[in-house]
Image 1 (cartoon, rainbow, N blue to C red):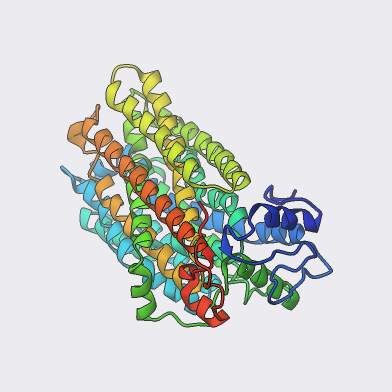
Image 2 (image 1 turned 45 degrees about the vertical axis):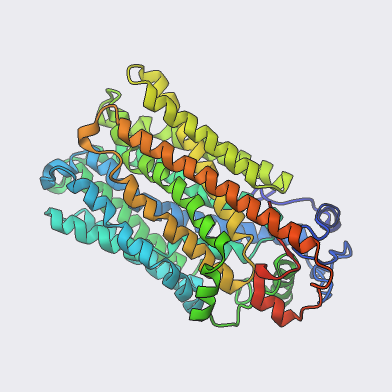
Length: 506
């Protein structure tokens, strides 16, 4: 299989399995005929030139690698300041007390505020324009970050980095969600999200290599980290303007028959997307009035604190184990690599089980175990280092599951656009807390930081419990309705997942 996500070559196998396992349990209640039709109302069949499995793999190859590279570079440009700090950023700029932490936190101000507007603009300007333009700009800002001469210059570049990165994560999740049915989405979401773990591993290796350029052209090694990694992003952004796919309704790499098929198979699973319908202020308020949406924000919020706490401070934490700067960078790589493999394993199991809740909670418990060890053990470098593996495995596998779970439970463009941006935007408030969790004065034990991470990751479990119960309760209530399936297509489109004949995935 070209990208490793595909199913059987036989067109009917996936469809018949879906019909057996999901008759009325997820999405809109409908017949999912094993004859090739994906929508019993539209009677749209898979084009004769392909099969459902081949079409899915084609989308995999065209969409997922591009977005993974995009977000890998975005996350790398965001957190490489941690690697740069090991090489003397704070010392050369004369940062005192919590000024380094303040430079981290200012990134989150625009990053949080502009999430929803960015997703609205993504829909307006098309993904290949909006995502590529922002990618170019945050790459340029990263280069400029390597040229700053003062604390104020660092603050300015971090602020604008937040401005241009704000739409990357929710925008990519939004775009992926418009191509895949819910029972096949988790592997794709996890592979995309795991770009963050690859960025962590890749960033450590790059920093170890680039750090050796210390003194080249009279620039310190930490400056070269920003300059070279930012320049790479700028170059890739110019290429990606021609490569990033648009929504399936507008994708130029699909034939008209294939566009109709991709849209119809998603409609059969989630209802009419309403791509052509503009999003209004009333839509935004309607989405945010749903308490399930609010709770989903807390699922992500609770995980962001430990996730960013680790991403920004892993090199600093590992350095307290007694490693040299180069060894510190190299030792930061394995936990990220193992987290990637674990996240993909859980995603595969989650899709196979057609279930999200238990995998999310189980992953969070692994993260708690890692932080508990770090909180209790302070004199055994091997045990402390092993705990970092549990932290990354638990936190960075739970995050894509909770995001995919919520994102794929939102029906239609307007609810998914607003809902996904809300979850990511609100959740990233946790980043502000994370950057002040690990203060210089708390080294080397960082008791306060680890305790904060445990508290917030427990909050994530509670939110998962509430969201899971809310979805189960809604499904149970709707199953008892006897006259709920006489809605028109327009009414279903407006209601999205709030339609009485919609079923949430647990």
